Amino acid sequence: MTKAKTAETIENVEFPSFDASKATDQIRAFAEKGVEQSKEAYSKLKTGAEETQKVLESTFETAKTVSSDLSLKTIAALRANAEAGFSHLEALIGAKSLSEVVELQTAFLRKRVETTVEQAKDFQAVASKAAENVSKPVKTAFEKALKDIKAA
Image (cartoon, rainbow, N blue to C red; front, side, top):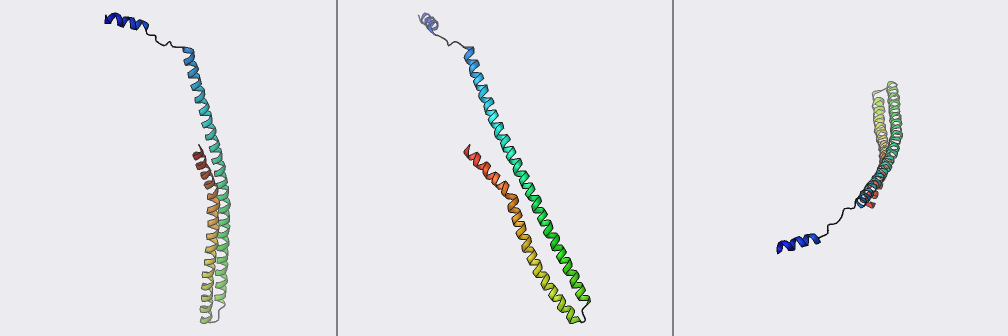
């Protein structure tokens, strides 16, 4: 009796039919969604790359300008130091006594120390400004990227 009942049950069971058109539609929708997501990701990547390129170009241009300013400042300091040295040498040659040589040397060294401190302050100010100007675009871009990542 159990065999007959099992056969009856099997005959009454319906198996779902496979509809190929529905499966094709689902696969197509999945593929279209994948393509759309890929296009969005590419667009974001392209935009990010373009922004990064602009930031790097700006940074390099700023670095070039700042480097030029530092070079000019260095050349001016070297020229001033060389002129001061030659002037001091001329004054020493024209000295009439040992006490005048000592006095000239002392005044020269004092002036050189003052000038060196002044030049160091100038260089520090220019270098600080340079570092700030060069790092500013990169910092801004980094902060924007972090903001975009948090928003996503």
